[in-house]
Image 1: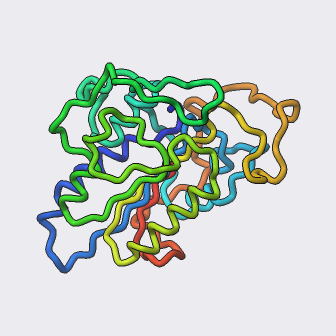
Image 2: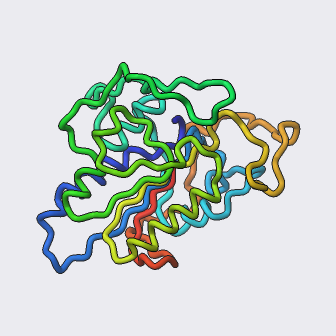
Image 3: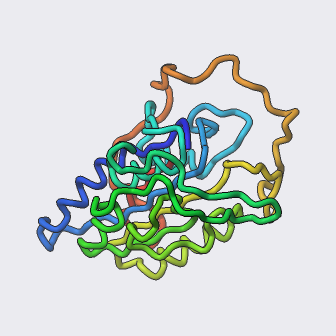
Length: 250
């Protein structure tokens, strides 16, 4: 996971979650929806992308908070995820490299092998902290942190899948079942991680072909993003049955 992976917000989320037990019962705790897209960079309309259209993510950016500068703690998937889930650097979580997943030709899901870089046990994580304070927790998509037993959440059957329609349906089902809240749902899309697929279940309806891509003349590092819409109003009010949902798009 690289580029615009807004994992640093987890530090704040863990800190807030740790204080949730001391809040007065009359204060309603917000529902939390954390969405990640594997290996996604700044190829979003809200970051100035002209060729790839992302209207729904652009809307979330307009109605929420858009980060102009965000960095991962490591350029590898599992260490970055461990930081998001633990609020610590990889050398503190123990997840210094990817857990051992071996991709086998002809199989969609990789085979799991014993991990060389297990997360240190006993360190609180988003799922455990929020669950202890009364949150209903869930995950859609891959966890990709080792060992999985450290995280008190039922693992998703959609791990490593590119079927985005099923992701949305499973997430919608969770939101419907837990509309009364409070809940924490982490939705981890596999796209745009390799292998690349031109279409899956008819999506996108009009694929962008390699010959249509015009590379940028310069990388968008340190550029002025003051022209982009930014608002720091949380929680975000959504049209779903959960009125107070914090949505962080990565």
